[in-house]
Length: 316
Image (cartoon, rainbow, N blue to C red; front, side, top):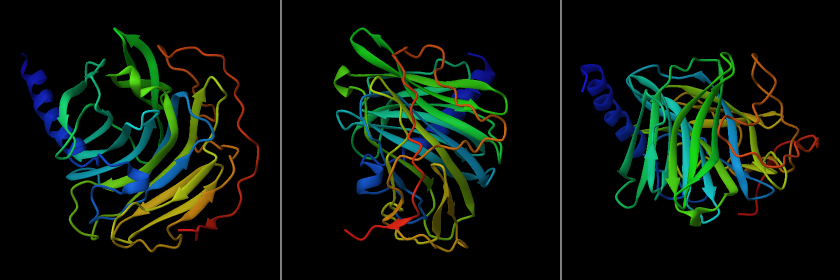
């Protein structure tokens, strides 16, 4: 084994440990977040139809520590059998990374010469799963699309692929492929976005900010944005975070010790499917299909309903 490969694998193991030890096995939006001692920005997305074979979301980091940190912006998705997976972009130690994981999966394969997968990772103290990551030199102020897609069937198991698309470079990088049991089915009607200080032990955290935008799912029944988005802030005890709706299915999530909350928890960011607006300065188009994704009849129809003003939820 070459010295460079050995070093990459060792560093990869460290980064994977940071990525997976702090991902909750409970479902993020409804029942909480692993690190309850640091600020959080959870938003629950409710999709109008299930059965999606691809789901994606744009992330643009506006402010973040560049090293000596463990902070991730993620999209957690749910399968028809209620198992979950996630895609993240962030900083692990001194490395910028993107990651892809699925709980209780069969096997993960990097499918990328710079990638690392671990197929027997303990998620918290119980359960297992597969997680993959690649070192990825993302930049502040640039848009990246995180995508999960079903790509093939392998010996009775279903293979899902995690990827990241760089709008400025017009290039897609595969994070990894993960096999799951056919009992998982397609993607369900819930997902969530979040920002997590994975190793922080208090509310006193460095400032971090990101914009989530263009949530989009592909289904044989039609393609959609989420019909509803509810701000929950997870189950953290900190209030040093705030989420602000920008319109067009986009929202800015700010966290850190100097952030003042102006949008309360249980606020609906939108309650009808919005007309999505790209936040990317490089391209207003959205890549529909990556190489290797299944081709289904597609009807690209996103409702042109104008998003309503913020609604504070008071029913629970």
